[in-house]
Image (cartoon, helix red, strand yellow):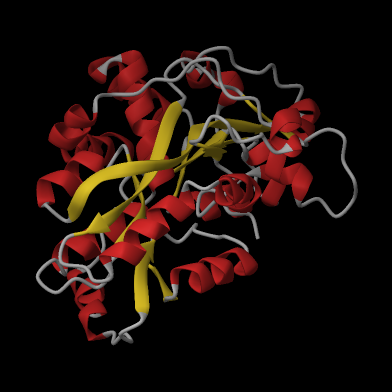
Length: 326
């Protein structure tokens, strides 16, 4: 997780630095977001079978990555891109950087996590609705990543709008500001610094439905129960779907398409579950045991049409900034 791995705007200057990168004739350039991770032997196997060397280019957060692709469109810095999700899909298509449709690779759920020990210590009754979080009993309890700088925070903002309605959502955000809402720059800061599990003072954090499973997987001692859980409140769950696509103007079209197929292969669909902490898009893929036991999928989520996100996303982030930070 930068957002997911436990181990939205990029600056033009940073993006324009990418065209200076040279690449060999037998090199397939793959642009990915900062949370991309797969076992090295699996990547090496692809290189051998496809007869090409992989150049993995980490473009930052997904929004930052897309901005870099748009700014370098005249001189593409990659041949294929992984990590554009349903919050950015319409923007990518409108900008004309993709060569064809996104092929789905994985999905996950942005939701509120809670620290079981901290909640018990505070004798806190878990909230049943987002509105509960505006009550004095939850003052200063929640930390959220900033939707202007975090894809996780942006997805959560969209969930509140989808689940509550635009006006009620921003009323809620204003009430949360008055009730001690903590805003972190990104997911890592929110989870590892401000969340009580990381030594902070906030027992609730916007993270992922798979985060409790990751806590078990990476624990130094064997655990049968996760120290965290997910609330999955109405208006507080967003289904994030990520894909892979060829880029217009890219090279090695045959190998690029093979990479698309590779990310949807059984081996990768299995590996990404405990590497990137996402659920596999291919329904036939067996679920990793740790996800089965500690990361049940939410029974509901609140998403908006990709066209609505494309048309209103920037306006909503600006309004959120005014309501919560100004």
